[in-house]
Length: 391
Ligand SMILES: Cc1ncc(COP(=O)(O)O)c(C=O)c1O
Image (cartoon, rainbow, N blue to C red):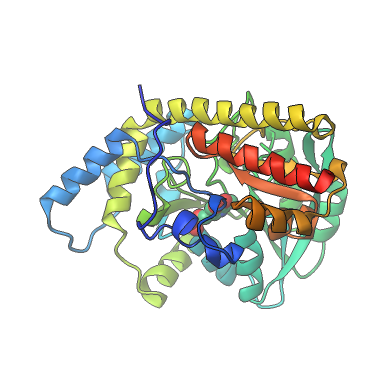
């Protein structure tokens, strides 16, 4: 019903993934499997909503606190997560990381600690350190092909006097871990015990790849918390710049509105992003489900090809996200050298695990959000690159 197979040339569209690959990898014209956006065009329903708005032709200041936007969000949560959300708690943000950054500023002081599960999405490191907060790392532990949280180590961090915030990534980038409701309940109870506020980044919430279900933080929440999310990841519209979230406490919400509108002068949302969110959440589910099925097959292809070439990897698709977090440690490779071979000989850009912190050493992260033909080529090059080092 939807075509995910036909490649679209993104070159020359000011696109970070293809046009600016040299910024991260030092070399241009690599086949990129890097930052998390997808090579697919948007869903037809989003395209026609944007077209309609474009055809209107007037792009004056806009608003988001209306039934069209709030209703679309509440109905999405109802449909996808069987959750009735409190629409009073909804806030708009230009991006998920802007919301994280602003809440770090509102909820902590320079020098305070922010707990993060590692490995972690690279922007988490940047946003915490640039805001002069201290990242307190809680390493996820790999058991077989699963990732689990070391709750006693986590609690020792939350108990610190200087620890103010848990910045959760749910589902987790880069491991693809889906937090169970029980795990989240434990996290919520720990945070409440130590009066630590929670910011739950749920931008990957729609990208379930297995049988696990996403549990929105609202379902387990206690105390003061915020959820930051967007349709941008699932519907591939991050360059429209638009996100939203939930803030539990009325005073925290007032502080948020003062910060975003008055301190930072961001009153009007990006109207195309608002239109795209409404279209996605009202009518985008069939496209999203077809996309997830396609991505799941992409991830299965990675497993099949990698494990065929290197059975010791025993790699399995993630529970969530279209990001393949591949543990290469069983091969005992020099991963720095591998990157060199991939870039210089194979002309392919795949994220080195260290991007996600020291806990990512020995891993690579391959973005599988692309037509199969590109993925097949990328896998061929990855396998050839690894073979060069194994020879
Ligand atoms: C966990 C996570 N949060 C946030 C973002 C970025 O969101 P935004 O562009 O809305 O700041 C990403 C993008 O890859 C992500 O993986």
